[in-house]
Image (cartoon, rainbow, N blue to C red; front, top):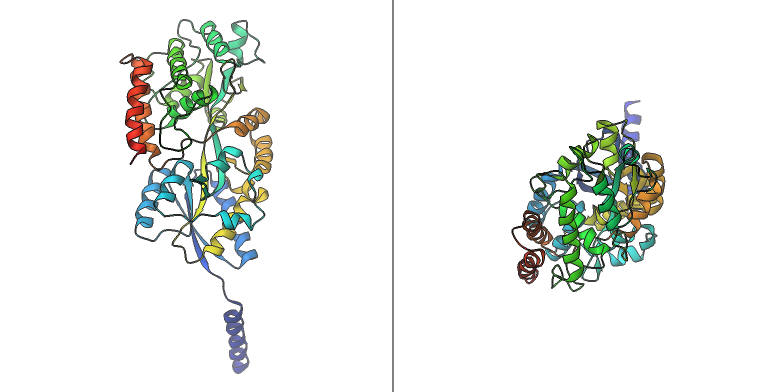
Length: 408
């Protein structure tokens, strides 16, 4: 009997060696607070492992740590096989040679551009090559408005303002005593530039030209956009420059401001902080002759150029980009349009408004040192709102600094 067991064990081991256990790949992602999301992601990875004979080791980091961990590891020629990166990191990682161009892999797969929101697909490219596949998306910004405050002011609660002029005139009517039409901010970080970029794009302008070598921030469309943002300060509470976007959103959920420009993920905050808030949503306000264009945020999947298991890494990315899987694993709105449609209808109020805004959203400048450029832009925004410099002068100065950064 003992001999029979040894023979059986031998054959089992031999079969395992012949079949192979499959490669083991590593995947670094961003940590999410929702426990059910982590559970769904782990299930998707288990399903992938079973179908593809590939082992996946998932490691998650808080946003504040992920960039540093990735840069340190990949700078040393190490790091994960598959990495989840912020859209604004794609150009930086591609320039450094950290990630592999995916054009041939995409061409030989079932994934295609039309499976994803155009802006998210565009953000995966740098200098004519595709370096990533969209994972999930968010858009700055949609218009949130307090329906009860609209009713009290004699405004139609089912008709949010559409144009810049509408937004400002409605905001003036809603500004009185300790109540304000909106709450703009500057704060720190990139959020304010996402809103300002959306104003510029909606007005037909760009922050950086298509070559990535010259800033257009001091051209008329951009100057007009920043003038408009400054104008909104007159219907906002004091303290604009020192406020963050979260500080301002708290004013909206507390019923102190009537309208706010924020991403679709704000609905989760409202559900927790102000579940009885009677709010509506509309598209990002546009100039009278312009278009409503938001600014994309979100995450992209890429392959480490030093990976020893690129085929397996690509199989994982392709799987996570499929509609049924993407719907389950995305932390924001899925980047796959079919998955996004299902997700929004199941999890969001005003899903059609959000979907439409996502289809017209654009990415931020595809340049390696975008964070430094955004900081120059943020400083100019602060100067403009504080009245330290005229809008055109502040943007002229910003363009000089940005052009120097673009030339590096």
